[in-house]
Length: 317
Image 1 (cartoon, rainbow, N blue to C red):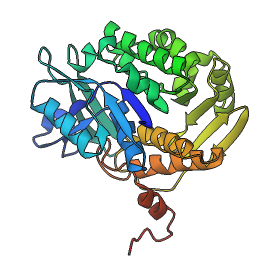
Image 2 (image 1 turned 90 degrees about the vertical axis):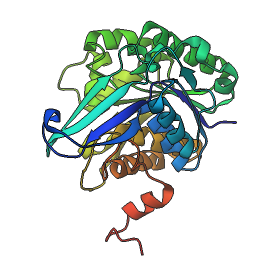
Image 3 (image 1 turned 45 degrees about the vertical axis):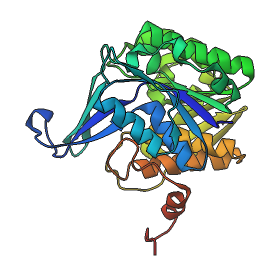
């Protein structure tokens, strides 16, 4: 049995080495990045098994994606190599010390051509968790249909469904995202969202705090709502109980991937049978670890890294 199955687009990632406008960058590091595969890596590093379903081009970048995920012990045997489209690209730079600039080149990419026929229903039905995001449905009609089909298979088999809203304004408007994702929110057992993402669905006043937002989101269907508050920690509304977790004090190097680490930490501990407070604390710790180094997934923690976070001097001897 696979603990977690996820699906979506993973791209080649070019990261500028110098701070400033991308037009002035001359040197880049090459890696990979994708919200869903980040979560898959996150749960494998925390001791569980994960599989990723997606499409990559029949090119060097596609080979890099598959090799990287396999190297992190993610099952990529269901990945489709698409000879008719290229692997998507993501370019990331730090415009200033406080602002990260991320650009996507994914129109007509292999990942955007994901379709229901690419799914392995048996794999999904045998999993303990299906994790999806709000990114994939925005890529294309066929990708949206693939997510809906995967969720339908999971629900029919009694598999826990996890949704990270992951709103991307480059892909659709707030109104379109709210309309397009409401069905998935209602079908999910757990929903991860920032405060801004939660407001897409709640329609409440701007004065609503995270607890009110979580309750409103839970009223749409999910039993567990996790509201990510960044440097202020996080809040969980699970089975009618509100819990708040304080942030971990760390020095931020790269904020990209923190939300994926948070989801991976919560899901991994829930699958391990941890109590709700421990799940939320681990999620916050994983998110904190993720921002302490560059890369979308490279600083996702292992269990030993979470223990190091609790040490007063931060020294591993």
